[in-house]
Image (tube, rainbow, N blue to C red; front, side, top):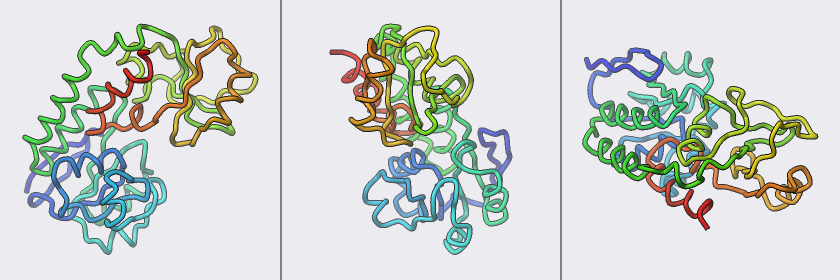
Length: 258
């Protein structure tokens, strides 16, 4: 019996290397693919869109916050991989009766790197995980020069408007590339219209997910922030904590370095 500790400090036990894995987190599903676990992963969520081949062929077990317990049970998993923020406590408590549940808790760049390495150990892909983690860490050397200390706010939702604040992975990625987040409260505060900020941001970032901001919203935001540069950005590069981070720095350079 092998003993593992997840990022919540919870202890789980596995009898052997897992052969039937259900992933409840899109970014971690992509990581499992990049670790070479094509046969071992048997279930994913409807939001696990990468890789496309898995999205088309793997069993989908609902959304991240409304998983189908019965569908997961039918898959007979020997490991379920979840996340504190993405998944609900109620679902986790039920799923623990089906199989060991390993939970990530990611609010920083370091948390993400540790998650990649820990999952590598968990699924017996330690060497592959270390290579991915090293590639990500190396790619972000001196990345704080990309945005050069410019100020920004990052919208994740509309009706009501919500922004990414402190103690979020999005804020950590903003900081990593040198953006100063003007939202200084924790988590995801609601901003009321008209927006009342002490300072006007140099950048207003409208995320492609979870709310699908588009060009219509960009024009609308210009009324509220006439002196800011308003951009629709790919939310996956700001919020996906997994192997997709290997490509994030190049994306950020394309957005913020003209």
